[in-house]
Image 1 (cartoon, rainbow, N blue to C red):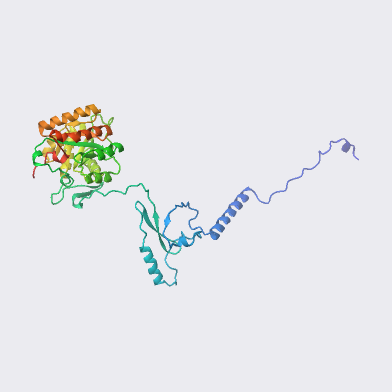
Image 2: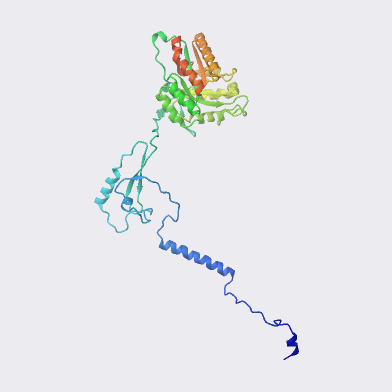
Length: 411
């Protein structure tokens, strides 16, 4: 034995063992995994009948009429959503069965009030079924729409707007609800009350309809919802309607009347286009009323083209009295436009509203007629409703706006 081997430390010349090399590297493993996933997807598509390809499906409980294919197969087989392209090639069509299916389709069940009936075609067989979608039992069916003769409407890029018909018919006359006054009251002082902002405050709008007499005129905001329904209801209850048109006040834009406001900085074509956009919001009104607009109504260059358009549309114009410098009355006269101006604004505290109504009576007594304007708020409507019950006993008559507007001259 070698001496060095006895003195040398153990394990110094031992060769390390190497781990066995894998036959595949990292990239090959990733490629293999992707290939395996592809095979799984192909196998799923080949073996599983799911024409919707995994799209989300919502299930809605509905009452289905009897005799449908779905009713005969409650469990379903996944084919009820397949597309139907007609009978298979070479397959004879059974005429009797086809007639029977057509008769069954025609016999649609009667849907209860507030519900809807839709027809669904079974994709696998082509059979149809009627499905009743129940509505809210407390929902009120939509009221009748305001009927407007097409001859009195003009189609614009914004929609239909009023026009004077070929026979001379005007919206200011068609939608007016004048009162038949007895002979002994035809010369009595007339008071017209206009309630603006109808459709903005739900409580104020409800109070206006429930508490105020038909002779009170309603002015609808173009920003209200369900304008067609409000207009139909108002006309049905014999309230005359005005469309409120936002116009530029002196402190604009700090005080902004809303979208599509008519502005002194715009051209006449731009303002008329905005006016037509607002006029298309609903139909059934006798005229338009300015909303705010102290600067606009005092600027003849801006106001004149707008009032010319109102006159050509066969409407009335009501100045809301926002500016004592308004030139609306002079322009209206030169364009044969039926015109009225607010004499007293009634938006204030209950005590001040009572005093304003007393002033309104005084103006009517002196001039033969007067116009008051209030906003549809419950407090104001409550005071006006109490006043309206007694005003005629004091020798006045409450009339709609068309009965105090200065009539256009005959052309």
